[in-house]
Image: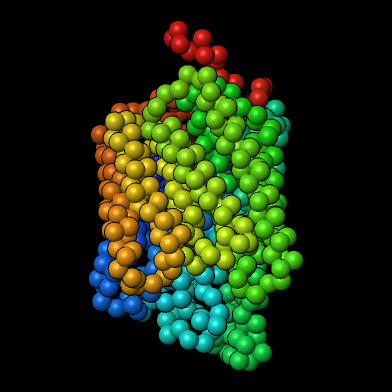
Length: 532
């Protein structure tokens, strides 16, 4: 076995007390995979219930607790942390040409905080669960809910500190640890996207933490913050919650932009089209994301003038997002494209994110949102962005860097098959929900009028296909650890410092500090590649 970070100690202690960013990334990878499948099982049960218009679980209370569990686990313990804490932790020092992150011990502490939060929320679910949804809207959470709300919000509060610590670590590392010659405009887009994500994490997460703490105090001590019966204002909760939670959408999707921006040039054998536009579009999205929370509250009681401003700002986010999509398409244009699994996932991401983004324009429009809010149209829209987009990008990145992380190649045929099955299953699951929402089916209901049954049946059938697609990578990636071929240092012929060290990397990452002498994505011309 080649010396690497994986062979640097085999005891449990060597893993649980490690300060190596690569091992901590593996700890996160195992943790979020567990949470992904817990949230996925809850989703499967929800779709099972909705096969029949009368509901098959037998109780609306069970349904409420299941969709709350699905939302809480998926949003807070998979979608928000997934790419930054796994791929980000593993790759940032390698891409920077550094030995480790700026604060290795803080990095390990972040994982422990994440796990304490995750275990706490699972405990809350096991002893009775919550029935409030992942948004914890007041006064439902402060007055009426009988679930373990306080335990759930404390869990998210704790995991928030993990998020803040990770963001701070990334920001300082990118500022201080870049290799000689790596100027800001020589940084890979993945690093830029994680930098923008980290800024949002550090600035927005404290607002959520304080909001959830106030909610817990109000529920325990009956102080008047959000509860109107004791002088509070439930709209204040929505403002504070969405001030974090709308930027949180970009905490999920910005790292996905970075992943795709690495993969498309590599598998097109072509320089990233409009590098600086892609970079500054990420920064623009991070800034504008703080100004659009009000579009979640068009029907909640804000003034018409406020709603108009939030509507216009919401449209403004579409501009930098569209720039990225055009640049990815421009990169593929006339490129020497290889349709390996990472590229198929990346192309799937572009299609699903574009669909999610375009349907977002409907809910950003005042008149359309009044009709569509709280319907399945909104469910479909945010699943296209947050699940179709983000999960596709996560799988794209996982397959792209799997040889670097593990030193093993996965079976390419199975990778391609899973990417196609996931894309088909996802569209079969969520596209009918656009129609259901347009027809007026409300979200969060355990039963529904019988005329919606055919489309719900179609959606549940799609969920079964999607579940198969999500299980396949779990099987063949584990198989590759035991039987996969040894990976070379750079199996994809990609650019970037992480590909200049062996697969898997040694503990110290590089035998000597690398020097950067050229911009990123310097791929050979199409003619040169085609003659290899």
